Image (cartoon, rainbow, N blue to C red; front, side, top):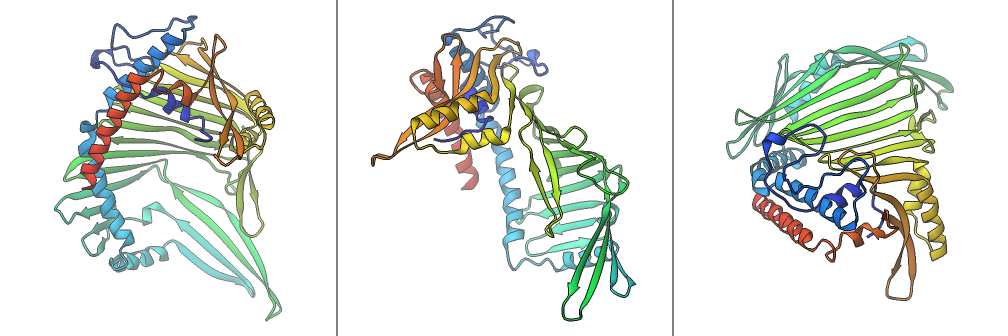
Amino acid sequence: MKKLPFLFLFACLVFTACPELDNDDLGGDGPVIVNPDDIIVDKKEVLDADQQKLKLEQVAMKLMDIFPADEYEDVMKATEKLYSHCDRYFTDDYYDWSDMEYALEDIAETLYDEKQSGENKWEYTYTLFFSNCTGVLTFEKDEVKYKESDIVKAIIKDVDGEDWEIVVTPKGLKKVFLGEFLETYYDDYYDEEYTELYNVTVEIPSSLSLKVNRNGKFFADVEVRLDYNVSKGGFDLEKDRIGVEMDVKIDDLVFTLKKASFDASTGRIEYAQSLRKGDYFIFSESISVKADIEYEDDGDDYIYIEDWDGEFEVEVNVLGEIQIKGTGKDLYKLSEYIDAYYESERECERAAEKATDLIDLGLYYDGTSTRQANIEFDPVAYDDGYGYEYYWIDLVLVFEDGSRYFFYDYFDDRIFEDLIEEFEDFIYDYEDVVEDVYE
């Protein structure tokens, strides 16, 4: 098993089972204390190996108790039905989209304009307005039907009699000029040069809501919030800011994309997300990295990200009880070390040392600032059984006493036997639900 990303740490640290939860103890992003036997870490306390094992077991057991398979069986079945309907529409070559195609042609006429402004010069204007792209789409067994309306709605008529309704509502519409784009080309046949000028304006909402009802009852709610700053002369990658936040609510689960943004003024790309179940904080993760986004006008209008050698910050928080956090630098170089295979053990050891020098990551408990273990890299050897051996680097936990464990060694059945049995039962329960859904 090779090359695990940083967020694999989250998966490695949380698998197990637990006591019944008390809703009186709900809170924010701090620890969920539900059992008097819970290990609560003091600000300066460093747990020994046995205590850390028990702490990790308790957190994993809580997670599995929060997500019983039978509680989500109905949601999984409903989601599979909705997916199967959509899959049929977009993969069936004989599904009739003609009504929708006619509607798009009418809408397109209000979004596009062209004129000749010189002997060999044309100007094209694109105005992509949300307010013009409205209507009700009804997906039936064999065809989709379009009806003019001042709202945006999709209705899925299930062949089994179950109806889905999806309503999209943009808010705070604002016209934004993205820029003026000039193209010139030479026609060898006519021995003349031609010029095409494109002006693009879009109507961007400050937020966008999407509500999904199933048979007239709430199923899911999505809210997307846009944060942007666009220069008057058009979008400029070297000056402007663009970001998005999103909340997705299905049943009692709420997924939040807290931040996904790029700010040219600071040169930082940021990303953060979290998950809650009812009032319970489940987990969050975030990363912030300094990098440059460049635009290359080589005929293909290529946008790429470079200079990943800046600092980055990363944090993963599970139930407010386990945190993996720290800093690093040169994400591009770090990824090269992680992805590479090495021919000799010494070469791999040097790569592990260099990769470790690029990070300062640690394991913490209960939101304290006391580091319980360091996270580093060590070499891994693999023999294919035919006399060929190669190496790569992988993550290790380094405890205060100097002991070092690869994640797959530390979490094996010699140490976490009961935990692994509980987790296997947990997975089997979900497998049974999935098999039932797909029957």
